[in-house]
Image (tube, one colour):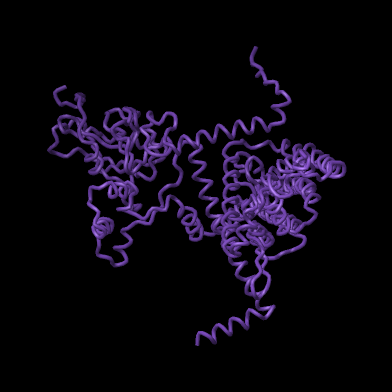
Length: 188
Length: 430
C-alpha cells in the first residue's frame, strides 16, 4: 500500500459542542501562564533560564560557555602552526558562497615567504557580514582548511561600511590552527 | 479677583447650554483617553500574556535609559548611588540590591509598557508606500473608516452612575441615547466598510480575498449578535445602556443576580437563556473584532497579511489600532450588558452614593476599568489558546448554529417570562 490512511478520531457529542474542550484548552494555557510567572516553567533548567519563562536574559546572561562545537558563527581566515597564511586564493569559497558575501583578490606570494611553492596568496580577502548567511559552505569547499566558521555571533555594527571585514581583520579574528598542512612544503 | 472668577464660573455653569457643552467635552476627552490608553494597554497585555503562555517573558525592556540624563546636561554619572546616599541607605543593603536587580542603576523601568508607544512612534517615522495600482481615494479612506467607528461607538458606553450636581444632572456617558445598544451595533457595523474598501481598493489578490472574508464574516455574525441580546432586552425593557447598568446595579448583574430583586424565581429560571446569550454574544464579539479564532480576514497562513497587505507606516498602524479599539469596545459592551458595567455589586453602589456622590463615581469608574481589563485579558487568553477556524467552519457556525440557537433562545426566554412568576425566593420558604 503506497499510502496510509490517517484514522480520524470519532468525536462524541460533547466534543462537538466544543465548550468543554475549549475550557480544557484555556486551563492548559493558564497553567503555562501561572508557571512562567512563578518562574517554574518546565524545562527551564535545560535552557539555563532565569526569571520569567524558560528564557535566558540575553545581554546580561550569555550562552558563550555552552555553545555547541558545531555552532556556526562568523567566517574567519586562519594561519597554520608555522604562521603561514593557509589561503592560496583559489577562490572556491567565493564561487560557492550562495550569498556572494566573499570577495577574493588573488595576488602573488610575497618574496620573503617560506612557501614559494604555493605561488598564490590573497592580495585582499573581504567578507561582507551583511550578506553572510553563516551557511558554512566556504568551510566545506575550502581545500586548504583556511577558512572556518568561528563561534562569534554578536556582529553589531554602527555603520554599513564597517560590515566588510578585510584580510587583516579576518586573520586577526581567526588566529592559528593546530595541524600542519604539509603539501606546500618546498622539500616535498 | 477670586470671587469674580467664582461668580463667572457660577454664571457659565448655570447656563444650561454651557453646562451641557462643558460636561460633555470633559466626558468626551475622558472616554477618548480611556480608549486610546486601553489600546496601548491591550497591545501590551497581548504581547506579555502571549509570552507568558509560551513560557517566555515577552517585551519587558524599553525602559528609559539614564544616560539620557547626561545627554540633557546632568553631570551625575550614578544617579542611583547618589539617591541612595541622599536617603542614607548603605550600598550593600538589600534595598540597594533590589534596585540593582530592577536595573534602576541603568534605566527607569517601564516593564515593556513603553513598547507599544515606541512601536507607534516607529510606524510614524517609517516610509509611506502607496502602490501605483491602488484606488487612491478609497485606499486612503479605508484606514479612517476602520479607526473611526469604534471611537464613535464608545459614546454611549456608561462609565459611572449619573450624578446630580447643583447645576444639573450629569449622566456619566458621553451621549445618553435611548437607542444605546442599537447605536453601537449600527456604528460598529460600519467598520466593515473600512475592511472591505481596503481589500478592494488595494487592487491586489490577497487583500481582496481578505476584504471579502471580512465583509461576509462581519455581516453573518452581526445577525447572531443582534438576536443574542434580545432576551436581555426583554428582561431589561430598555435599550438605554445607562438604564441597563442602573438596573443591574440595583437588581444584580445579568450573570450574577445575587442581590436586590435579582433573587426571584423568574430571574433564575431565565439564567439558562441568558447564559446561552452570553456565550453566543461573546463569540460574536470575537468575530466582530476580527480576533482569533475568527481572524479569517487577515490570516497570515493563507492571505499574507489580509486586507492590509498593501498598507505601510501609519495607515497600517491605524488598522492595527482600529482592531484593538474594536476589541476594547467589544469588551466594554460585554461588561456593560452581562457584568454590570460600572456597578460595584452587592448593593455597594447605593451605599457609596449615599455617602458621597463623587466618591461613588470614582470607585465605579475604577471598577469599570478593572472589568474592562479583565475582559481584555480574556480576549488575549483565548487568542493564544485556540487555533484559527477554517473558513467554511466559521460560516457554518454563524448561520447554521448561532442563528438557530439564538432564535430558539428568544422563544425560550419569552416562554419563561410568560409562565414563571416573579416570586422572590424568600417568599418561597415562608
